[in-house]
Length: 110
Image 1 (cartoon, helix red, strand yellow):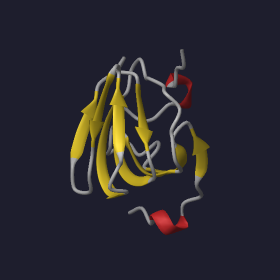
Image 2 (cartoon, one colour):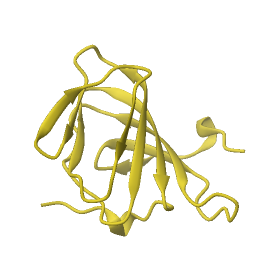
Image 3 (cartoon, helix red, strand yellow):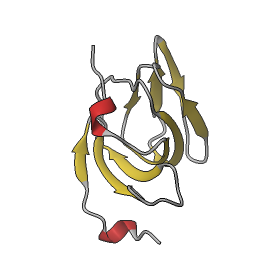
Image 4 (cartoon, rainbow, N blue to C red):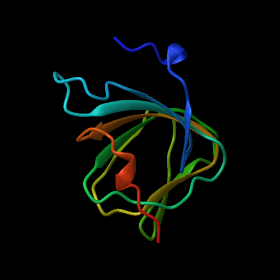
């Protein structure tokens, strides 16, 4: 069980992330609740696939996926495969499923 209210937030390129299930043998990934402060830093992963589920969004919330910028809203979900440069634009709170398990060494910036 993970209680995100009890998990310490850590800075990340997106804002502040609370990460659960790291090192749990029964689950091959990690689950994050991330609060995007305003504009996240454009980055990508070489090995990780991230699935974003938008818990809360401002009306003008968007995601940049490579050269495309799309509008997003609460209740939507997107998959970000390895190699796709991405960032959130606008304040939002997202649940992120990361497969395989999150590795901070797999955050890359141009």
